[in-house]
Amino acid sequence: MEHVYFHVDLDAFFASVEQLDHPEYRNKPVIVGGIPGDRRSVVSTASYEARKYGVHSAMPLEKAIKLCPNAIFLRPNFHRYQEKSLQIMELFNSFSPSVIQISIDEAFLDMTGTQKLFGKPEEVAQRLKKEVKEETGLTVSVGVASTMYIAKIASGLSKPNGLTVIPNGQEEDFMLKLPITKLWGIGTKTQEHLKQAGFYTTQNIYNYSLSGLKTIFGNATGTFLYNAVRGNKELLFGENPKSRSISSETTFDFDLTDLYAMESAIMELSYNVLFRMHKEQVHSCTVSIKIRYSDFTTVSAQSTESRLVSSVDDMFNRCCKLFEKKYEKGRGIRLLGVSCENLEDKDTHIQAELFDFGEEKKAKVEKAIFELEKKHPEIKIKKARLLESTQKRF
Image (tube, rainbow, N blue to C red; front, side):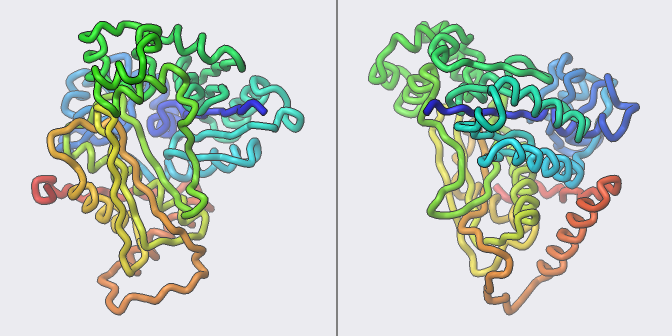
């Protein structure tokens, strides 16, 4: 049976939610991440109107202000974004028995074997896009293919509000006609390295042997390039069946080099994981972090404590400690991911801590906010991140 995967990407998600909630922002450049004067803030999301000026995620806010001084600058409202994300992910569950959420604004839907029930993949994707728009007011871009990797690339080819279908049997033709700049996971440094080595097309890469690519680019990058131009069939996302987990990760358009930007990304990922745990009524004592560098080498670290992860702040602080131990200073980062592992239902008994240090109260407040916003999405409660200096941590 041929696999069928949808990759669904919410278009400029944070900025689109703000434009949805504030009609006066529509058709105007909106930059979410901070307001002028915020110390060391970075761009989380830029609307498509702002991207025309060269603004992109992970860019220092000061640079974004210079590129687009007339933009509407906003601090992130993570609770509101989570509420919209949960609404959309629940809709996805009505289309597929296997929805694999990989970040707050994107997911894979395994549609294999559903044609008799739902219809042709392209028709289903069109219906999904229509329902998302009607029920949430937001648009999504969808890629349809036989591998997750190709579906991910396809979803980004006609944004916003796009749909790209790669029919079975045309995967290799698609990949070999693709510009190198469209290969998912390849950043500007790798693109420059490719040019310097005489690789200008995906066909150039395809014609080279795995051993040859490893010799030129190193084991990690060479292996990635070899598999990428062949559709990366082995790349799969999903829960580890031996250890139930909830994870969230993001691949950056540009290598992260600023420590504050890295911490900001970890904060966003921590929000995503914790609020999905609230929704699923689970808890965990174990957190992990994944780091992928610009040369595609990937490292991870995991930590288990005797006490439960109690709040977003707690999750963030644990992940930052792992990051501090694992990160090699000065290296550019292509991907960051965080997760809670070994999940258990909240009715599973775990011994309470002898000393609480305020975490129980913080967790109750956080849970109350989550429940309140789930019942009343019109209520918006913002949580400001403490502007702790990264020099203290690193």
